[in-house]
Amino acid sequence: MAVGLFVLGDEILSGKRQDKHLTQIIALLAARGIALDWAQFIGDDEQRIADGIGLVRQRGDVLLSCGGIGATPDDCTRQAAARAFGVPIQRHPEAAALIEAQYGAQAFPNRVLMAEFPEGAGLIPNPINRVAGFFIGTCYFVPGFPEMAWPMLEWVLDTQLRHLHNAEPPVEYALRAFGSGGEGDLLALMEATLQQFPGIKLSSLPFRGSAQNDRHIEFGIKGPCLIAADAFAWFSAQLLARGDVTIQDLHVP
Image (tube, rainbow, N blue to C red):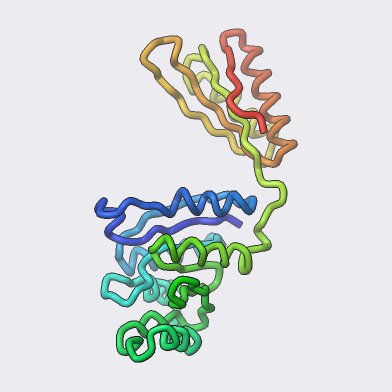
C-alpha cells in the first residue's frame, strides 16, 4: 500500500511560507519502517484537492494531508474530501463537544465550524488545542501548523496505520560510477538488473562536474535487505566487468 502526502495552501505555492512537512514526515515514516512513495503540493482549490483525493482512492493509497481544515473561507479541504467521497458535510458531535469544552462560549459561532466533516469521518485527536482532525477511508487530514500536524500524524501512524509498520524496512545501497560515458551506455545493464532482481528499485543521477574526471553517475539500489544486497553486488560486478568503469561505494547498510 503506497503512502502519499498532500501539503495544502496557497501560502506554500506563493513562497510566503516554506514547507516544513515533507522532511519531517519522511522521518516519522522512516522511524516506523515506512517509505513515502509520493508527495504533492496543492493550493487552496477545492476542485483540485477533490480531484487529488479521488485519484488516491482509485489507487488505494494512504493519504496524509496537511493544511486547509480551518474555518476561514480559504480552508476548503473538508469540503473537497466530502466531494471526493460523495458524501455531505455534517457537524460531528464529538468534535463539536471538544471545541466547546476547550473554548466555552467562544466556540460559537465560528470555531465550531471546524467540527464539520464529511459524513462518516473519524476523529484525529489534537493534543495542542483539542480541535480534531479527521479521517475518511484511508485519507487522514490534519492542520497545516507543524506543532499540531506532526503529533496528530504520529497518532495516525501508531493507531490507524500500525499494520504498515515494518520491522525490516527497505535498505538502499549506493555507488558512484566514473568513466562510464553516460546513462545511455548503461541502460541495458540497468534494465537487466531490474529483471534479474524483482522487487528492487534502481535510481541513477548523473553529475557532470567541472572537470572530465569529476563526471560520474550515482546509482542507488533499494529494496528488502537480502535482495538489495545481492542486486548491488551483481550490479557492481557487471560495472567493473566493462573495463572502462571505476566505482566508489557510498553506503553499505
